Length: 282
Picture 1 (cartoon, rainbow, N blue to C red):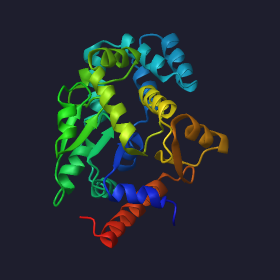
Picture 2 (cartoon, rainbow, N blue to C red):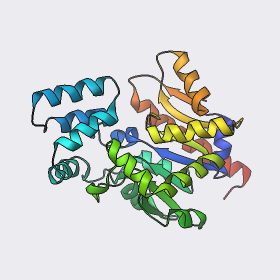
Picture 3 (tube, rainbow, N blue to C red):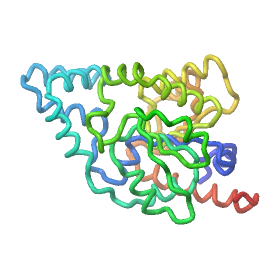
Picture 4 (cartoon, rainbow, N blue to C red):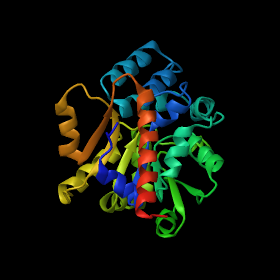
């Protein structure tokens, strides 16, 4: 296989890439974890009325996930919602080679929207010659200082299940985050401006990420954009739209064969290690 662009392999090898990890990576490690849409539908089962449940289901089917999540959040009292989320996401992290391979890419900054603790637990487990990653939630105040420091950072921009009350789930929580922590998005925007971003297991559906990427692409159309590992799209126009709107080039794997994505991450790891050895990059 030779699916990975040489330019991306070089940038990863020279540690000029931010890695963005989505739910697909967690799901590959533990299949019982839900997608965002499945999570909302599952939580909706705890709503009081059948009318509300059906409304959420229709909204999810139309892709109105933030609005559907808002109905769920408003319809379930906060302690019960926290208990439900904790039961889903606060599970023992399985050790998976996909995390070992991502860790070995040795990016200075890793970003995730995942609530679970799989990344940090696996990074701790597999860390030997690598420097450990410091974990920062979206509500932290010292994020910029730590990104400027020599230490490696794992940024959990939707929060962490270790504090279920602070998770970003619905439209209101998105607004509160931007209102209380505007520096978080300024920092992310700066990172996306000056680095190549590689999206793994992430559909680029987060509205805030779309706004950041769209804004950057409008003001600074870099020749070398970002990359995303995604299942083969149903029509070339969809891939073209991601490139035109967000400057994201797609590296595809076969639809309905998500194990191939894990194989491709392993292949990427091998190519980066070979490139570093060939060019004397430590």
